[in-house]
Length: 230
Image 1: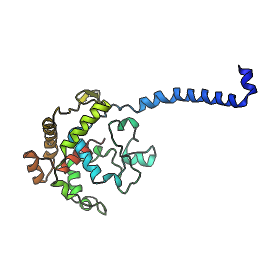
Image 2: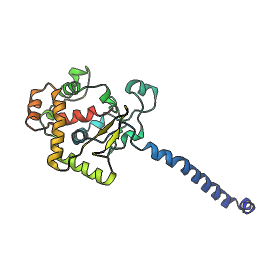
Image 3: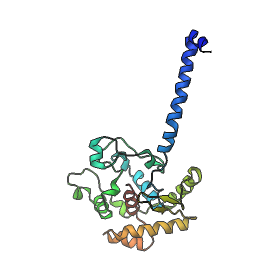
Image 4: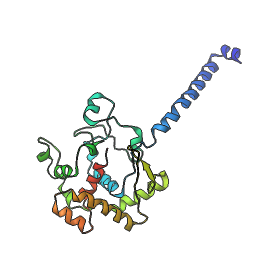
């Protein structure tokens, strides 16, 4: 067999290619599958966080802010550990981005607070002198779309086996459960309960009153989303 291959260079080349390809797949695929699994501490988005992600996308925040820390010292010094593929396991679609008019937001939840986001979205230049970011005051009055967020949760839970209502391991060894409602009413109730925690740390009285009356402004949902980016 080997003597025959030596006399037929074309088939020898094909054989070498097949062997190398098979060996490469054996080496690469298991590692790729492992790397794409959710890393410890990564949880699915709650209904409110997902609604905030929709606000983020609707207002094209990803046009100026990437969500991908590359493995370069200049980036890890500023933003923290570089991004891992498993951290995006529950992102659909990915919001990596390639343009940074503003800073990367992959880990913004580690260094910004609810009240900082509130003030910044209302008056960016007042918080960051020289900022060219516009104010997003309409988010303080527009209502977040919780129903659409819940519909997306149902879809991804059904087709992608996202572990809602199941324990997810955290970095400190504990577990966390991200609950998904079984109905629109329950989803709204869960989102409202989370919104009340966010609103408690805000200063805008109109937002506080809206949440107290069972309504969730977009700004609250957006802050919930930004706070979970860690």
